[in-house]
Image 1: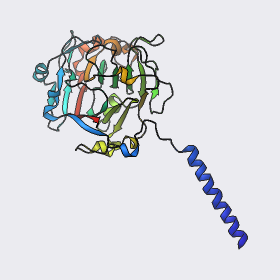
Image 2 (image 1 turned 90 degrees about the vertical axis):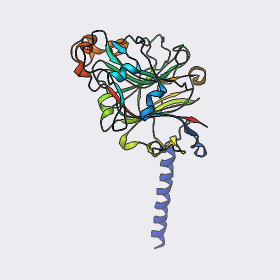
Image 3 (image 1 turned 135 degrees about the horizontal axis):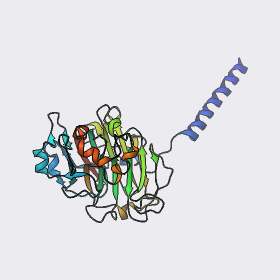
Image 4 (image 1 turned 45 degrees about the vertical axis):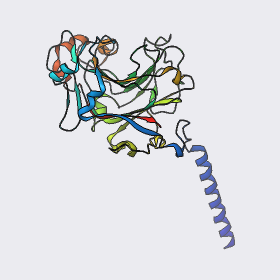
Length: 338
C-alpha cells in the first residue's frame, strides 16, 4: 500500500510539473500594446455617424479623382437626385455608384470625407455590405486633407476588382518602416511605408493582406465590424464577422469598458519601433469612396478574372455590373482616450 501511494504521488508530481512547464513555454505572452487591466476603460465615444444625420458629418468631394479613376465624383445634391445616397427602411445608410447608365466619361460615384479631423483614436465601422464589382476600387481610409503623404495615410479596408483579400496599408514619406514578422493574422506584403521606396512599386507603402475579408467574402453573412486603433505606439486593425463581434463593440449604447486585450489577434499590426507614429500621422479625415480603374484597379485589370482586358471599356459599357457596388453602413463611431 505504501509503495502504491508513493508511486501515485510521484506520478501526480510529474504531471503537475509538466503542466506548469508546458504553460510557461507555450502560453501566449501579453502583447506589449495591450493595455493593463486597470486601464481598459480608457476610450470614450467622441463622434458617431449614423442614421438620418450620417451625411451631415461629411463633405462630398466632387473634384477629379487623384488616383486617375474612370469616375465622376458628384455632389451631395446630385447623389440624392440620382438616389445614390439615402437612409434605408432598415436603418442602414446606403452609398451607391451608378448602375443604370452608360458612362463613357466616367461612372458616377461618391467620395465623402469627414468634416472633423482626428489624431489617434479607435475607429469602428459597422458595415453590412461593401462594393464588389469588376473594375471597382472601394476604400475606407484616413489621411490629412493636404500635404500627402507627409502626414501619412492609413488604409483600413481596400482592394480592387473581385479580390477577396483586404489590403491594410500605411503610406508615408521617408523614415517609416515595419518589421517583416509581426504578431498578426495577415501576411506582410511590404515593409517600407515610404511611397517612393526604391525596392517597391510607386505608392505601395507598407502593407498587410488578410484573406477572405474583402468584397464578396466580406459581404457573406451580413458583413462585419471593421476596426482601426491608432495610438502613439501602434496602428492595428481587426475585422469581426457577425458571429465574432466583441461584446464591448456589439452593444448599441456607448460602452464604458472597451477591453482590446480580449479581442484576439489583429489582422494587421504596424508598430512604432521603426516609425515615428506621433511625428508623422496627424490631422486625418475619414474617407469612404468607390472609384473605378485608375492607378490600381485599372493596372491589374487584365490579370484579374474580370471580363475582357480593358477596365475603362468594361466600366463604361456595363452599368448592370455595378448593382453590388454599394456601401450599407449601420454606424461609424470614433472613440478617443480620456
